[in-house]
Length: 151
Image 1 (cartoon, rainbow, N blue to C red):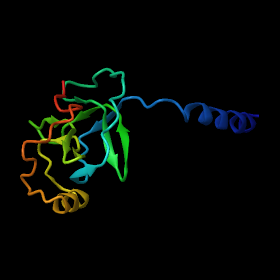
Image 2: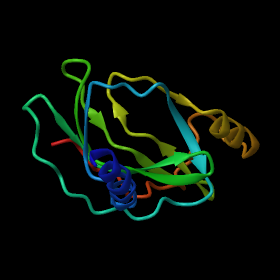
Image 3: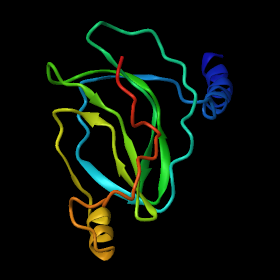
Image 4: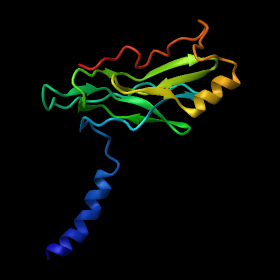
């Protein structure tokens, strides 16, 4: 009887929970494997509205959700509580900066993590005749995520 109920209700439960909206998560000191500056032809969409869960401990920092560039599209990285893996480390919010008709994307990361140019950004910068200092005063921050700080 229990196995029959499980076979009937488990698929229904999974189907009901599958399309549910993402909620905030908790991660403990997880470093991103590599932080690369990227380039995108289009601006990220407006930020999504999120509900912040209760802070798990005073050591956790809130990482607000942001748009992350994955391959050739923007994907939402949901907000979460995270404990820095290094004492004194602070969260640096994702930045989107208009640069020469495209958008330079610097992913959100901890202050102790090293950021370098991704291959796509290096190629784009070379093809568009921009040096590593690059923006020449004409390009502006896109404004989304630029002023976010962890709280």
